[in-house]
Amino acid sequence: MAFNSLLRRASSTVLPLAIRTLGSSKAFHGVAVSTVQKGNLSRDLIRRSFVPFLRFSTESSSKRSADEKLVQVLESELQCAEETEPGHDGVEEIPAGFPFKIQDNPGERTVLLTREFEDETIKVEVDIPHVSMDDEEDDNDANDENESNDEPNSIPLVVSISKGSGQLMEFGVTAFADEFTIDSLSIKQPDGTEEQLAYEGPDFSDLDENLQKAFHKYLEVRGINRSTINFLQEYMIAKDSKEYMNWLKNLKKFVEH
Image (tube, helix red, strand yellow):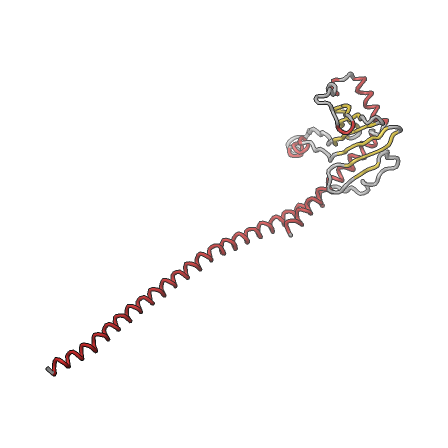
């Protein structure tokens, strides 16, 4: 009987201890698993955040490299343009007796000439020179052929002559060295109000030859003559070169900033 009592006391002591030990083992396992999961999650978050950072760093480096390369090419083009462009010293000096006032705004490709001629107001819009593609082809073939088609460069003009009535006569003109041709001729209504499909006459080249000569003389008397044309040739070539240089400088400044 005493032995049975001793056995019951031993069992009551050992069994709770075993249960507590088993519970502690499960708790430790849970903590260990939780720690490992948190570690994996942290590594996954770091990996996910690091990949966009690498992508951003690569794109930023590529952008900087491309910008630096473009600036180098622009600087080279600027230097080449400065070295190869012929000098135009004094071109912008208006010759004595030049009949027009010149309005030349930097950054614009056209120049406006104006003058008052008796009861008329004359305006001439002058565009930059048109370089014939034949000139470039001739330069490329110069080593192979002795003959070349030296077609001169041309300058487009729009000549408008108005009187008190408000109507104006408008000529489309192409200027070459020492001469000009009339390409079109029309009468415009004041304030730009034109009748739809208004008759503008036949092609100028289809007019009677005497009528063509008379219109040429009409323009020459009003200042569209050889001296004006030759001055405009040099002036607009110089302007084209200057605008091109400024254009390159503005591009370079934009890319650098």
